[in-house]
Image (cartoon, rainbow, N blue to C red; front, side):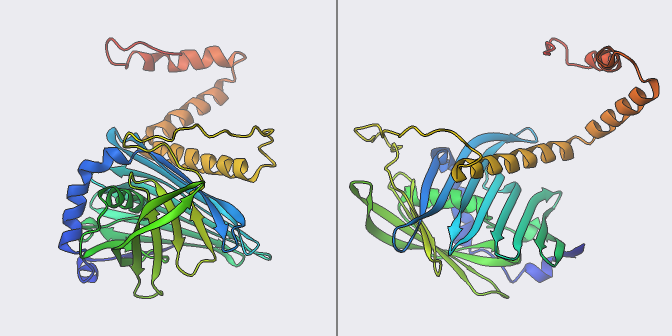
Length: 348
């Protein structure tokens, strides 16, 4: 495994602008209005559907700290190549990344490229683990960034929240230069700019949408730019990475958050639920699987005593080899019941 640690001197030249850092502090008060889900369809230039995109934000708890859970995923086939991205992240109420799992894959004809990135705060550092699986083998790398050099840092997950806040405020202040990670997980500058107002057809309605441009400037890679347009309430209306042959679009108006609702309920056609054969359902199954694995892995890391306890139980079980395993387990774990807080009922 390759491991590197960036010192304060190596990162001090990369700084977020003062206005960007101040905006993060001010934006925290608007986070409660950003807890909703977006669902878009990925289409080609000719309008052919290629896949789907969704992102949702809900309240959650991480290490007994109140926070937000973001889940974003995009799956489809572009130029006859299946590809997808999934992000599961815990974000603090200060817009700080507590833990984030980012998974990307591209299934080429002769090989599959799979990239997984895990980000977690550990003491005074932000630790980034990268695992890239290709036909040639698996490459792993660990990067460590001192938190003291990450004022104004915005990850891919917190970027979605930041965009929603700007969209609801309907303004992007001047000099919005944040810090982000580029495609190689190198620390880079991320700049946000307003694109102004446009009109877009959503279903049968012509709506006003507000645009925001985000560009990541990398020292080793070419810059990457996204254009995102939002409804006045913060719902995402369209999203595209410049240079990509596909664009993500909203097909139906959602129920708006600011007291304005559609005058009719959309009628959904019933379809047989053979989820193994349905690309959308199967994609959601894979996303949910990754989300649960990340959640379970996080819990096990936070409670190393669990592995020790189970190891002791299994060792004792194999030594005794009882006929009634259930009674043996009940007697083994009975002493732990007395360690519960007074007045707390036991649930089985």
